[in-house]
Length: 167
Image 1 (tube, rainbow, N blue to C red):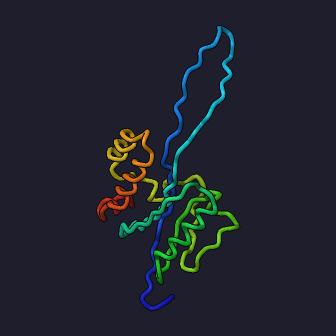
Image 2: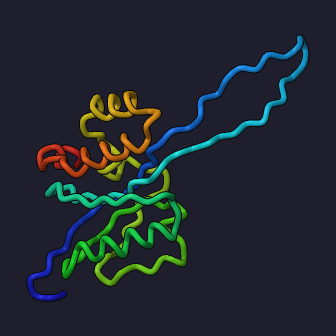
Image 3: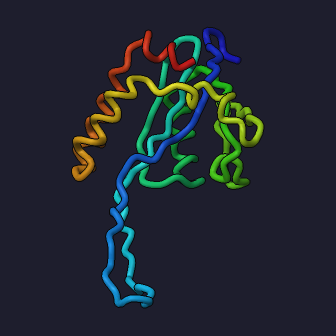
């Protein structure tokens, strides 16, 4: 380890933000089962994030999907953000995280949490400002791009006290 480097303990997770078309009703004759073409148009994006529970320092980046390719991009981006520092990155055992195609940067060490144990990951145990997040998504449900911008502003402006509460 280089002189002056720091080892961060980071907890990582991702979340999908978006909307799904609402279902409707179909009128048919009595005893006739309705046959309707369903178009589930979905507009969404994923926020990949990592937080250091002790300091509240956080990293987040947006991607269009959750898969190994974008997780690799997140790891490469996180590695650049860390610079000469190192990170032990606690992750769940999602297929995107455990793919053999993942090439871990030299300054990031993966730490797999047990399967089906989200309570062990501090990033999943507390949602900061749940009323604010709910009102944002309720008010802008049909304007995904606007809610996306607001959500990213909220995340980027969380203060130290709020982020330390997550841990």
